[in-house]
Length: 114
Ligand code: 5GP
Ligand code: ZN
Image 1 (cartoon, rainbow, N blue to C red):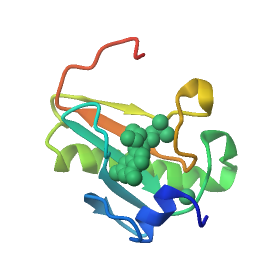
Image 2: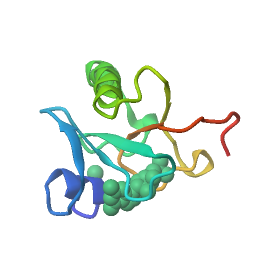
Image 3: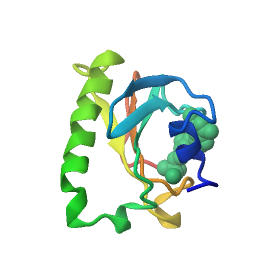
């Protein structure tokens, strides 16, 4: 998608602080972190929202969960704990319409989130 900010980051047309990458996804620091650690895990495929997933995406989703573990380890928040979130559509607080997983940690998370 030519006007998608995360597609541009994946294509390295825009700069980001890459934490991890493989052939399926890229993980980079959020530009406006809401916690000391705030990483976004983004599939290379442009999928707008969680609602657009199909059965063909099952393996990719499982992979993203494994990458959550990897990112938590790299950022040294694995044992203490962390928050994982996917926002969907306006009421879910989604701002960028390219599916992404938030991994947040390094502070005590509260519940319910805002
Ligand atoms: P959403 O609200 O869609 O779930 O989250 C979008 C996230 O992307 C926000 O946390 C926002 O700070 C982050 N973000 C928006 N633009 C950029 C950017 O250009 N670079 C990076 N690294 N993060 C971005
Ligand atoms: Zn995209």
